[in-house]
Image (cartoon, rainbow, N blue to C red; front, side, top):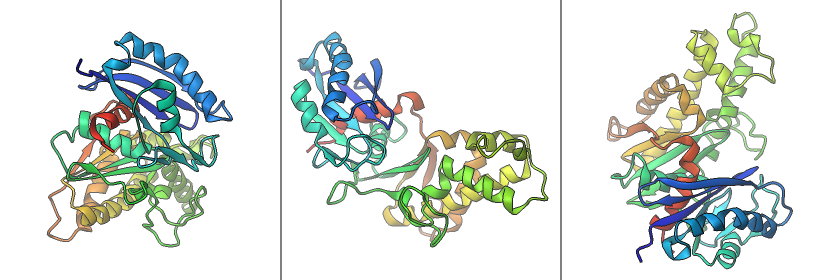
Length: 321
């Protein structure tokens, strides 16, 4: 029997989402379980099995599934281990792919969540016919996946592609989680937009802004977007500055791997042209002439609510040991 389905599992800091996906990217069944309620990973896998295994049976059982793909923070494709993930309860090196294979009796592929997103884009999204591209996820943090000649770049140890932690402003803004200064993530994430808003409001106390109607705790990237859409000067300046930082970074990435496209994904992309226009302008301005006007800057076509499951499921179709 031709195997028709793959299982996709996205392990986040609080929730693990999972589903059964066909080769065309249709999710037939999906559900979720908490990922922060178990001190040991085996208990988490038991809860996952209780909900997921009946779904596998519903589509014809293990014989009808090519395997399980998992995206997780600090997931290592080579070893199948989650290694020192800061936002998970299971500390140290967790051999989760091996544990999953023993529990489910199915091949299990693991990588980090950003790489899974890139593989999902390659199989189901706007880069189906593109062999060289970079995905940049602009959410609470900045994730990335680099694809060269149709293959995800993993590096010698499985951890290549951490573009969000590249330094774009030496001795710049402190990234509280890593202790590094001036990384892309500290500026071009939803968290970074909020930090920029606080800095600009503080630096220009005399300037009126709709953003001053929000307390510090209420201020988010969404509130900055809402104010920018109403024509607020400071809010628009925040997106211009964020686009400047992101565009300069993308120029560096382009001159490294010469991709055909860069795909932007995540909550911050809801800002649309407020972010895209300054990003494209600064990207092109910082490229050598041989790279200018060649790289497509795209928004992901994957539905955000489904993208994590789709990306994880694509691992078992696309990635071989």
